Image (cartoon, rainbow, N blue to C red; front, side):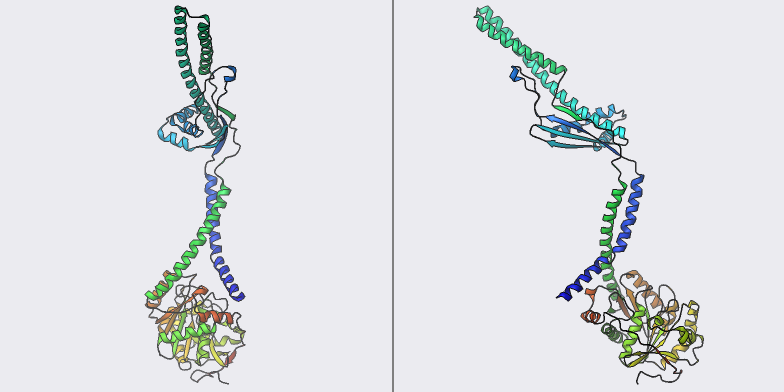
Length: 527
C-alpha cells in the first residue's frame, strides 16, 4: 500500500512540475508588462470627507416652545442627493468646469464613492472623491460635503417655511376669535386664554422665521478632506504582483490543457495518416529503455513491416532530443536478444551519441567509424562488437560532429549498405532530426522501415505532419510512430512493471573489436 502511495505522490509532483517553469516565466513577463504600463499611466488621487447625520433636530418642547423640525429621512436618501445631476452640476461649476454635458456629469459621478454607516441615533457618511491632482480631489470631496449640508439646510428651511405659514394662519384665526369674544362681552379669562395662546404661537412663528433665514439641519461635517500626499492609483507593484499570480495560474492551466489536447492530437494525427503508434514511453532519463517495452516495440515493428529481410530500419524524429538514439540502441539490443545478427550504425553526423552511450573512444576505434566506411565503402573494414547478454551487437560509431560527410551519405552509403546486407539480419540507422537537416532523407530510400520518434512535450501535430510529409516525399517506407515523454497512466501495464523493475540502468560492458572483413560472416555472438 505504501509503495502505491509513493508512486501516486511522485506522479502528482511530476504533474505539478511539468510546465511550472514556463508558467512562471509567462507570469513574470506579463507582470513586467503590467508594471511598465501602470507606471506610465497618469496618477489618480483620492480625498475623503466625513459627515455626521443626526436622527432628529434639537427639541425645545421642554421650554414650551415648538421647534421646527424637518421630516427624518433614510440615510440612503443622502446618497441620492449627492449623486443627483443638479447637485453634481453645481459642484462642477464651483470647480470651474465649463461645457458641462450629460457625459461629463456621468464621468464626474463615477469619480465619487460613498460609504454609508447607519446607526440608531446617528449615521456616518464618507464621501470619497478622486481627481487628477491632490488639490482637485480635496476640493471635490469638500464641495460634495458642503453641498450635502446645503441640501439638508434647504430641506430644513422649507420645513420651517411651511411651519411659519401654518402659524400665521393660526395667529390670524386667534386674532379673529379674540375680537369676537370682546364684541360678545365674554369674560376676561376666556379672552386672556386666547391672548396667551396667540403669544405662544407668535413666539413659535418668530422661531420658525429665524430657522428659515438660518436653518440648522441634521447634517454636520465631522472631518473635512485633507490634501492627499500620494496617489491612490495606479499601483504598479501591486498590479504586477496580482498579474504575476493570475497569469502564472492561467498559463499553467493553459499549458496543461494544450499538452492534453496535443497528446490526443498526436495519436489522432498518426491514425489519420495511416500510421500505427508502435509504442509509448515515459520521459527518457537514461540511454536504455525498459526491456519489456522495447520487446513490445520490436514485435509491433515486425508485424507492421512484414517479412522482408534483411531489414534496414531508419530511426529519426521531427526535432532534436526526442529520444531517437535511446530507441535505436534499445531496439538494436532487443533484436540481438531475439537472436538476430544486428548492426547499429550512428549516421547522426551532426551530434553523434552512440559512441558516448557505449563509452567508445575514437583513439582506439576511430578506424571503425562511419567516416572510414563512407570514405571507401568497398574496402574491407572491421566493426565494434558490444556484448549483449551472451550475444553481440555490432556497431559502426561516429566520433564528433562531421557535417561535411553528409554529402557522402547520398553517394557512398549504397555501396556500404550492400556490404552490410551480406552480413547482418537487421541494420538500424540512428539519424539526425528530419526537420533540421536532410541527412535522414539520404538514408530513407534504402530503408525497409522508417520509424518516427516524437516527444509529446516538444513536437505537436504540425511537426508530426511535416516530418511525415518530408519523409514521404523522399520515398521513405514509414512503419509507424513511437511516442516518448508520455504520462505514466497512458502506458500499458507491461511498461509500468518493467519501469519499476528497471529503475536503475544496468552497467555497460567494455566493447570488443571485431576484425571480421567484408565478405565473411561475422561472429553471431556464440562462444
